[in-house]
Length: 479
Image (cartoon, rainbow, N blue to C red; front, side, top):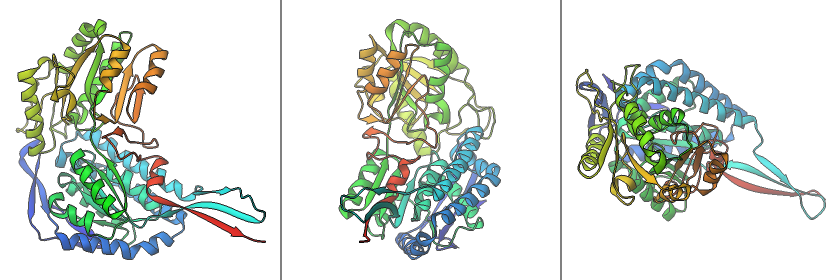
């Protein structure tokens, strides 16, 4: 049986503030492991260890830090099968998707390793003669990372890798239902030779140790991914301390299907965006806005597609989607399913029987017949439930798309290049696409949203370097 541990200052220890049993969401008879939960003193110790390691890590030449990240990438790839299997057992993501996520983590580490040998400043002209002016990036210091369970490998790494290459040290608090995976990742990085104290892992409940991390630890920045409510609390706590913060929160993403869309290509993309990972992505397609003229044909195509989906235990390679991640997640999503069945019209549903022991399975569901201000249209569900709305024309479709407090991702499906380009301007979202699903973005591209989805910064790509560093302006007179 697997057990979590803290990794603080290069040493492993088992905290003693309570235990939590982790059950396999694909098979509720299988116990995956035990989490040993931390208390206040563990978090303070981790922050102190990160602070002590900061000067040594920041003092390494950036190419040397890049070499460390390359070693982490090699080690992660060598442990792909074991790590992906553990994550699938712990939080229920299908194994084929989980393996792809680990590879994404490998690529992220390689991408940011290369930043160690790239330019990190610029020379600026001066009005006076014999003056050299230039800028350079400098590390922030100690960064707190708070990561979710739905991408247990990729999201921690897309925060960790740019933080480290910029010269920061890290305190990492993963979500509870990703903590066994986090422990395994820390073990991999430990054996890959990451210096003591550069990365410090603390396992625990956010309700127990979150306030300590945000309010008492000696931090210079916090990067958070999770619910909107918690993200706003993170932002408030950091603002009071005048430390840098980054929050990636909710989404209620729309896919717009115009009357000239190619349904043979559109339906698979929307199906993937809505139901892969059991809809547990902040970029998942939750609203489908269809021009009225094409609605009957689109509905018929979606009915056939949804009915054919493979719902399987997470370790089955044939699984299109598996269970939701936990009992609490199951209860939350099922409350929306009940609402949909009572207040909306079900137009597509998958009822394939799962033959393994019962798990937290939610069958994919597509509904219509509700107004645009209904809770099913406005609230983030984070499960395999999507709502279809009908639009009179392009302008009406875009208006429906923008009727949300969130603005993370949006897509339009059309053969008209003019409408595709218009949508890229008109949609109020941080990531917009033409003839592509709403879910996901390539690791070298900025990730983030507008409105209540993000704190107006971006993760991944070059944009991440802006968050994890300060810019210092330097001037020299050599008269």
